[in-house]
Image (cartoon, rainbow over all chains, first blue to last red; front, side):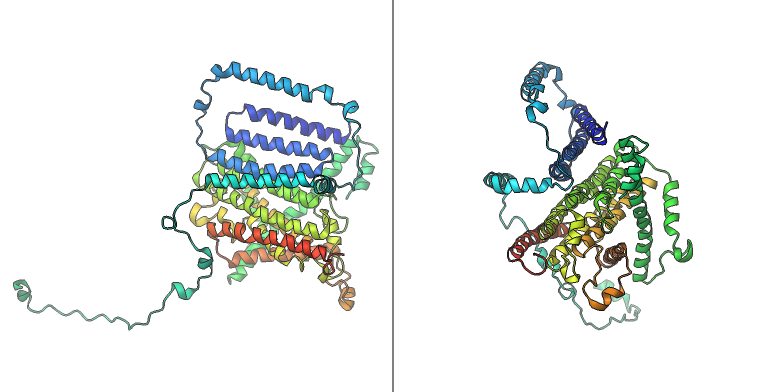
Length: 217
Length: 353
């Protein structure tokens, strides 16, 4: 067994196990963390297949950003697991049918007939100085430039749409904004005013004269 | 680095075992000095801040207090690790490991001198960016697993801050990539040969500051240490950690500080290249300095700035911090990507030829 093969089997085992754990574990936070592990090990498998750009971007984008935001949401939700699990037996037959049909479709597309060296051809083993990043970049920005730009515009559209959906516009009188530029540029003279005044000297206490008169008033 | 050793081992061992042993030795050779630097960086920090505040700093253990880090390490290791009652045990233990592992793993592609690198990979820059992005999990898992409001608030603040500044950091790296035309860190340094004017510092001056400021935010150093915010949330995400589990968080923070300093030195300050290259007298005068010496000098200068900033600035308010990241640094980096593109188009200066 070569070292690469050893690493591949190690990462592949971790990836499948963590995928399995992700769908079986009860706590959604733990499920998300298992998914993170699955992403990282999958990225490792991709890197052993000399697709280091894709592997690193998978870690950077999905593990480093998307899953963190996902964890945020899951951690802050107060999920009642008992309610979620309600009606499990009731929906089991339907779920089972869906599972069987999806598995069948996956078998048709991803089954052993469509894989193997005789179908895909022998993969090219690139030398050590081969840059996967450069190869992908050249393809993306020349052959597939329009598709790439279209995808970028679609993503931008998604961002704009999400912001518009979540935007709650209120009248300016209702909301007060902080002008941080002004706050940052503030000087001590604007906040702190020196006032000159004479020192207050306490008068010596005089004895009250004629307390009877006070009472009469 | 150790091809000869691997060749020697594979004469009488399985191939994969020889590779594995060589890898382990390489890891130890790189990680052990870093851990030592981390230990004495904590000493330097206390001493530097002490002098800035006109006091002595540690001066009891050993001459000039030099053995203080060892005493600290011993103390942390012998203290009891306390598990909060309602904490999630596994995640509570895993969190510090998640914080430290990426901070150590990133060193695999850092070149210490020409050819002195564990893995001279093509996508080094991307690898650093990807691996350091995992560090967020240490924070967020620690905050959640502690099952404490303070820890959770600190974790939420800290991770939101980290992923925000990562964007600015990524764009700053993109400009370095554009100017050097390579993601290999050795190639990036070699592209800056020919004296101080050829360093990427000048054409990328705003990016240098953006990168360093984002680095401060990534490592949660003052003025961006809202994650700990003693005044509001006790000690933030690691309130409930004690003993060595806390020590591992500290190790991770300081290892990241050194990593950011190394990256800044490599990308903007010419890495191991002498600043006197091309200057007649000075070049021969300083020819004896090894490459690692120059890199170490630049890195210590940057680390000093880290400590200096801590002694100087108060903590940012959270909304101002987010504003700085999203409304100042990110637009600036996007603008500079176009500026660098224009500079490349017109073959500007000694950097683009």
